[in-house]
Structure formats: structure tokens, C-alpha cells
Image 1 (cartoon, rainbow, N blue to C red):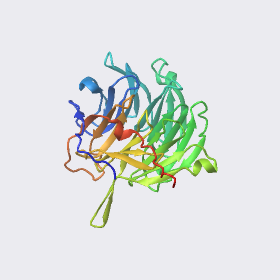
Image 2 (image 1 turned 45 degrees about the vertical axis):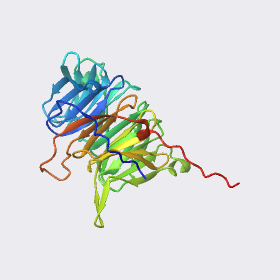
Image 3 (image 1 turned 180 degrees about the horizontal axis):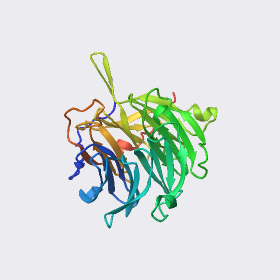
Image 4 (image 1 turned 60 degrees about the vertical axis):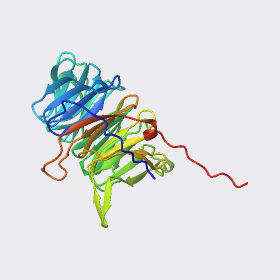
Length: 341
């Protein structure tokens, strides 16, 4: 039986965005939290102190954001721009542009590059050290089979999930073509892809209440390990309601992972042992994004309606930061039956 404890949702951050939260991310160096929103802002919070440290206005909704380091970050905007944000000065500049809204942005420490994915069906790599001016910062443009929906990095590996259930796996050291061209093993549209911290594969979620656990190793033995499971569903009076799984976040210490769905729940899973470890108390509305802090001691949760049921009255957008107890995220040791005497 999974433990369901009436713990609080966590501490609600003050000064939240005034419209849908598209993503939130903890820094790799501190408890700073970067949040992008449809209200055209990127906000920088010091999460442990509940302080808003900075705010950057954009010309349109911001669909993603990420840190470069603790002094700067990047954003992906529906006005087709990729922007660099400098926290200390509050200044920003345009790193480059796509031909359609930019859906995803990641910074690769391994390559020293910013990677963006757009609804223009391309992936672009940028060198943020280049002087301002797109022609000096653009490293390469890589056509994708469809609009880019989600990106994830681990080491030199990049996983790109697009519309049409395509998944491309790249080696950042040779971007000329994908290392692997795959198709999602889930039947419905991909919502989120996140690489395992140990670099062996990735988890992928869909709009239809499922998560697939995939592996890079294409050998028969490697592919035999993959599986998918149902989650974020409810059954009432013999009728199933299935919710999109918007967010996946891996715990940096234990390799377990949290999922967030439009049902307002955050579940924690042990992928190796195929078990749910924990379910947090229900949040006010859909879970739009999740992020663990660098040491895994905090979990940021975006409770923010994602318009899966169209425009309707909904709870205000909110960010909760909760302290993570080890029991919620640590895999339980397997108990083997004692051999007969």
C-alpha cells in the first residue's frame, strides 16, 4: 500500500506569475529557482528564503527557461526569440531567433552551448560566448521531423521529442545526424522527456496518463528492459478519467523520479523496482512543472492550470516549494523471502 500522508503542499512562494507557469528549474549551484510564464515574465526566486530576486519582461509568453550559472540564464519565447538574462544587472539580450515560437531551451555544460527547440521544426545550438549578433552565436541548425515539444540532456546525449511521437537521440559532439531515430512507445502525444541521471536512457510521458521507461542501448538485452506504466488516472463508477502527465523530474541522489499530472497529483516512482514510492496530497490544480534542487532536498511544484479542458474558472497559479523527506524518494530495499530451513 502506498503511503498517502496529509503533509502540507509545501511553502507557497510569494509574488507568483499572474498567468500559466510554463516551467520552473532549480539552479545547479544554489537554491535559486527560475520560472517562466505565459504572463511574459521570467522570475528568479531564492526559493529557500521565499524572495523574488528578479523579473524579466518579454514581448510574448515565455515557454521555457534554464540557468547558465547563478549569474545568468536563458529563455524561450513565443516571439521566436532566444534570450540571455543577466541577473545581477537585470539586463537581457537576444541570443538568436527561430522562425516560430521557441518551445524549449537547455544549457549543456558538456558542450558549453545553448540548445533550443522550436515549433519551426528545428533544433538550434548557440554559443553564448559569441559577441552579440545571431550570426556569431549560431553554431548549427538541425531539422526535426515535427515541432519540438520537449528536450533533455545528460552528459553529451540530447533527447528531442517532437509532435508525431518522434524521438531523436543526438551525441552533442556530432550533431550532423541523430545517433538514433526512434518512435515513442506510447500511442499518444508526448508531453515531457527527461534523461535518467545515470545516462542509460530516458523517461517519456504522454497526454494519456502513461510514462515509458526507455534505454539507449539498442541490443536485445538493453531493449528488453524497457516498459511503460499507467499513472495519473482515476476510476469512478466504472468510468476511467485519464489525465496528461505534464512533468517528470529525477531525484539527483537516488535516481527515483516524480511525475506531475493534470489531476493535481505528484507521484514519486522507483523506476528500477517498478513501484510507486509516494503520493503527495493533491494540489489545487494541474501540475505544470516540477524540479528537484541540486541536493534533492527541495521539490518545486508549479500548480498551474494547463487549459487541458479549455478556458474555464480555475485556481490561481502558484509555486510550492516542499522539503523532501528521504522516505519519499529513497528506493526501498527488496525483501527476499527467507530460504526454507
